Length: 69
Image (cartoon, rainbow, N blue to C red; front, side, top):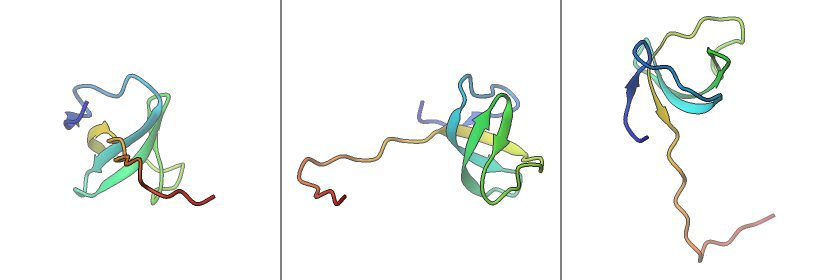
């Protein structure tokens, strides 16, 4: 899914990382775990008011990229 979903209408079905819009219109990558949102810059005990969310898009891949280990 690559479109914004209103959080009040439909929370994510699976635990994981999501792009999330919070109440001050900032976009963050947040963790959704068992019905709660977590992640930087928020402390684990604070309520995060997520208004919309979407799946994090996959990164582009090019076979000629050089990977360093």
